[in-house]
Length: 248
Image (cartoon, rainbow, N blue to C red):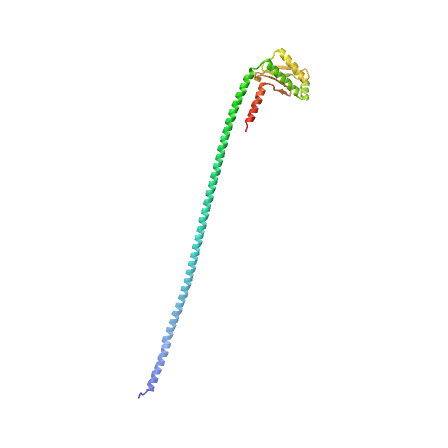
């Protein structure tokens, strides 16, 4: 039979309670506080780490966005540079084509000018040669028949003048000057002067003089009157017509 010592049991129970109080007051509370502090510190560290991780993720996102922007900007720069190069190349080709066309046009114009000048020079030379030949041939035809023919032409031109022009010469009383390629004998001078006066419808004084440059013919000059009736005048008109026809 077991005998329980209630005093011992009670004493031990009191000791246990005292031990539990002592442990709870001096051991478990500080440890719990330390654990709580450690838990709070760990939680804070975790929160800070999470914040750092979020910041790092945001920074990585910014870096990725920046890289994307750099890539897009690089592509845009390369594209713009390529387009600028293409435009510059096209502009250079256009300028080269325009310069080539201008040089070609200038060369063609220079060739045309040289050709026209050469043709004009040869034409003038041929014209002067032809006129010189005609002058020499005409000089050999200086005869009474030729002189009479030029006289008839002169009288016809006088009669074709307006009446007012003929009357103005007739009433002026001035001496008319008649030029021939060779000197006329006095009888011919008197005859020519009479016919010229009759053509004007009045008796006029006509003075005759020699002008070898006429080649052949009879020219008459008076106040406000010139009748060029000679080979020289005809050849001068021919040269003027040829020069006019040779103009571009």
